[in-house]
Length: 236
Length: 106
Image (cartoon, rainbow over all chains, first blue to last red; front, side, top):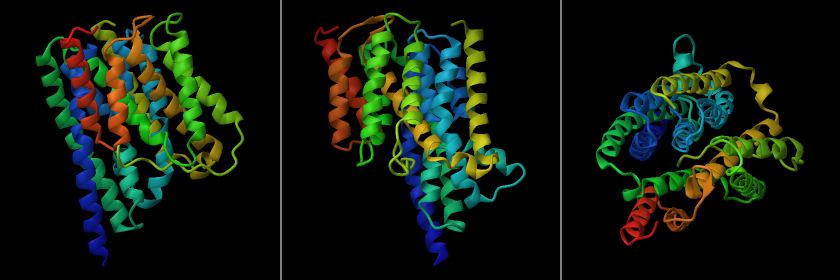
């Protein structure tokens, strides 16, 4: 019985790893187009290892934003990873050197697969196989994308600037659906208006951070009628 | 951004994102169980990603321009509504913009 559950968790981990790893190609290509060199592009995938934060970082760099804005935007997008910790630590029971390793591998996908399986060996298998699988493939495909992006030349000719916008849309899309999502859609609309209205006035990168401030105000002040559950998305 | 400054940003950014992950594994669970905290974090993610969509789609430096990126984004939205995978969405958007520019659109 239990080994069937572990096998199911591993199977799901592998398919999620392949799907997620593949879009490392678009990250790698866009990072090079944004002006990062190959070692910098790889350093973000190896060390930062959080798709949303990495895309945000290169987005701010591409738009000519400051280093501070790039770090702040990436950090704010990484906050949700911090909230996954309490969901996965009881499942993993990791100690010693495994603890920072588990932390580095705590992302949307590993949390989603780990928490989707029964606590015990299956949940542990789901988390570790997904975390390690995504890590390996994400970095491999980042390298492929960076080499590809370098070879392509003028990014506009291949529509890579539009691909960056589409990548962010695909990342936010799953968070705008569902019956509980009307506040999310409201915040998304307000964020777009705030960012575009201030783009001509503020240095690049700052309008995006201003949009985050809108979300913090709404999140802390708006009433919480029901406990909002925000399950991590298995798909990016 | 100079190459050195970019390196500093890459390393500091990576350290910040890792530190946040590690804090999640170390702090007592109840600190983060407050629904308002979870909801605010979720809304910050939505706001940042939405703002990045808008800026990447129409900003050019500090100017707002409507060019081939907008119809490409519309194609991406249709693909997402049809539940296309991430890679397909991104490739369709790039192909749309590339095609429109080959046809002479800005």
